[in-house]
Length: 129
Image 1 (spheres, rainbow, N blue to C red):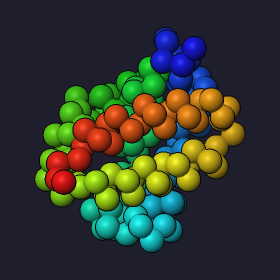
Image 2: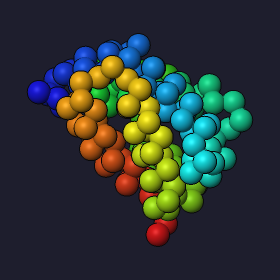
Image 3: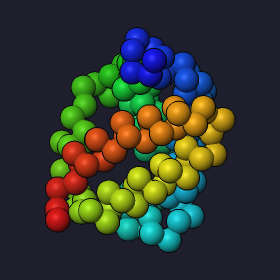
Image 4: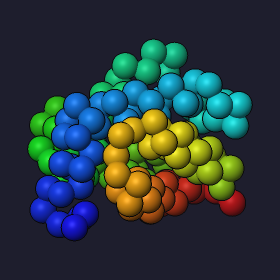
């Protein structure tokens, strides 16, 4: 059952699987025209962004708390508050995640579950109409 213990972390393939997901996510952000605006919100070199998201997702999926180990505590809305994130930006982020999820060998029910779960923080980051 996803969301219980480390079941989601394991279903994602552990740290290696999460890194593959994050790489596919940022690759989609580089490629999808609708993601150009959110790509521009990131630094030219995405290495730190990739590291932070992968570390965050490890802990968020009930695996090791890698983000906290390196960067400390996080408030998802707080770290994005300086960005103008409207509905279109949220939807572009989610479109990148859909493409990234489609490229993973995860079970289909886990892909659907993870997308629903990721939609929550994506909405929480939205700070504009």
